[in-house]
Image: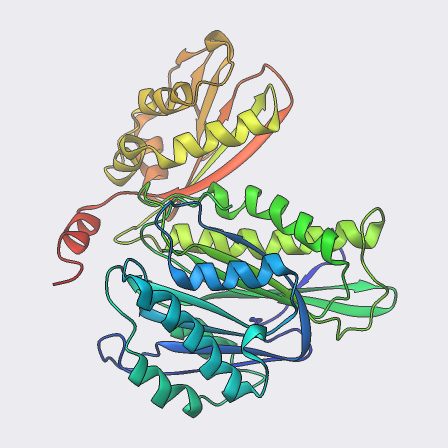
Length: 405
């Protein structure tokens, strides 16, 4: 909507009442500017919604946070570490996650059941609690500390990922800020990626939870880097009501604008995760139009964006459109092959389900751009869906073949 504005240098601390910070404790290997523990703090209680990994092997950090969210408790802060996933470590994992919350609570001056926990990094390694005990008290919380927090949750990411957007509700300016991390083990089904979204909106909890579920389905659940689902996937949305707006509860224009702004923030964070895939050079956007339903279109788009053969074709700048049709058909949605059209960066290469004459060099050049848009028109309905992925390069294989050594 036209009223939504992107906040310049926006971050997770752009909404009123939020601050953040980070510190290097030595959980990750040392490097210039590296941080590995981050805190987010709200100066007042937050209603909170969340979506989490559906992996059967789950990090106790997720278990603790999911329990808080599902209990309906308000949350005041988040502690997140990078370098260690706190997963597959037996009984110590839950004890350590609970202690992390308690350490952060002492720092923030709140109760431990008001602090969410998140971890990301190597699976099968215990959290170095001595380092966490020593360094969390050293974190300085700042109203402009969003970039520090964004840095503190990076693992194999090459850049921080954050954004904020604002809009007007009943004369009050409402802001939604967000931060995410993720570059590998990315094929979410929520509900290793983390995303934290904050807002100063006064929003009814049930509507907020519903909105987050719907937005996650359209954004984070539509990205793929390598087909592997993390044990630690977490998306949290925290609302503290500091903007003083009339309560957003659904069924009116303000509610639609809130949901649209949430979508804008989440889509940006999701796209940036896909863009920053390990070893990736190209962001892939797969768009399917004219499906029998939106669900069919999203399913097909994700099948295309996650296809290893599509990914490698784009890396090699090979206009192998047969792979796109293969990935489309693999989704098993209803379609009529003679009605299919395929475009690469708006250059049509398939009509009526078969190749047409096109300038091969133009398509090769298009495949060499930083973003490659694959559009498939099915022409059997009104369903639309989009997914995002990245190309698959030698660097991904080399990097992940020696990840822990």
